Image (cartoon, rainbow, N blue to C red):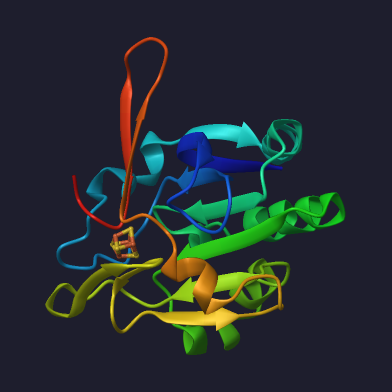
Length: 180
Ligand code: SF4
């Protein structure tokens, strides 16, 4: 099974506890005004990547876990469920950032299944008037949905607001809750 991707960052410290593989999925129809990542909205522009390949990369890199963000991961619910199921036996953690609320996830069987293997879900639309940009919440209405005891609020307090990565070829990548 494949995920439709916008991009992958193999080591990040700004997208959850520890070093993490970050996967930005491509495609989001939720249309939050002020969205900080509009380039991820058009699903037709994504790159297809095998789930097994992503899991193998994460395990090989020795990261603490994976963060799925976007774009909207829960608009690819079957693939996200399969990704979580494949990741679980490896012992790596899983965080999912979604624009759907916890209520919207719980009442939709496909979305509920998609988050089944997640340790933490950050849920809710981005609301510009409640902009926060701290921890893993872009706005104050977004909820932390702690689904296992793997991560705690204190882990997120320590996250950098902004991360700037410079690759060997000079490519600069910025990530985090502050818009660089
Ligand atoms: S759910 Fe996320 S990617 Fe989609 S419009 Fe809202 S902020 Fe942007």
